[in-house]
Length: 526
Image 1: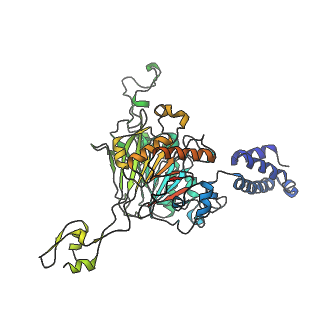
Image 2: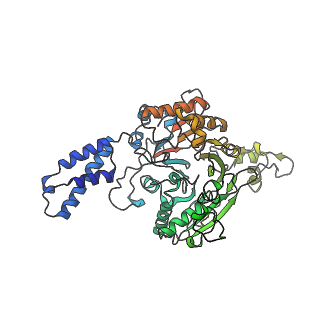
């Protein structure tokens, strides 16, 4: 017989929503009698688990009305009807989730099935933003905590690593082994709890690829190194064979020192277990020899005079699959006092210009070294030395542009440096945690509302505003529509507004977004 404890254990382990639990109860009660009268306890337990698992999978898929991927895998027209987004925005959105069943077999890239796309137009563009976790504070049945992946063809950059990020990646076409840089906006738990586990998974993935020279770079506030090092030491783990370089962005206004909020520990002196005359230790910036790990390297990047941290773009690993150089920078934003928080921008280099050989030959310049000067904007003399040729006379226009992503961490206000970095971005990912009724608490809680996100998008002239870090209180479709509508009230009419969801993927076209200016409906609700 099936015991009550087994049923409760299955429910607890799978964390099914209400309808799923009802189906589970019915499924278990109708277990075939041959399983209930199994010859051995071991066999009965195994067969019961298999049967319950299949019933739970069916129930979950059937009853989970929050499944984004099940709706977004429709045609563009159906998607517009279901989610209320315009057709012009729908063609740039798809799911990054695959149709593979991960319940059995090993979790490696070879097990991933064919990717499910909406239509043929939703193809890779070399600049794709995959939202792995879009919730704020705590995970919910609809959203996990913060994690966003920027897929750039042969490489990927990860922004924040909330708990469960590894599992989210396993359900997508993204590969853990392609992640070369990880950016942490701040040290709150919902943004970093998945970091150490992800790095250890990267080690295993790269070892399977026999890539012993791989280097992973992590960027974040002071304290991120000690966080990783202490996790490794206390869990007795190591990055054997893979080097992780941790860059701490130093010199900020909110850089933490000594203890919480830049103060010494708030513990009475007679309760402090330390030796007399022993100096206080800075848990964020001090060096702890007991946490030393030869595969974990600590470096710093100092803030420039303009308040911007410029991040090296040369690949750390000589075996990097993509040598393309990106312009990456960071600036502080206002979150909570003593909690150093960053926003990051990633921009492609300017696309190379081309010379029209027919025009150049007619003007007296044959193919050669002078073409390079013209591409760089330098006038040259014709081959016979009689005429000066200006670049605009022979340079052709390009069909692509330098695309830019601005991803801003939790904040209740942006610094001038962050506003400057985000200017004219193609995509602005901004939080919208605070609801309208709690607007007076934005500064106290250190978070923004949808209206504030719209104002930022308008100030930086963003093409697309993606509302992220959604509060667990935002549940039904009506609340999502209201969130997008409130952002629309304050942003520019030409800016398109999208509400993010786990496994949503936004594809930025190579030529940038080209929206119909006559279309007044700028809200894309997904």
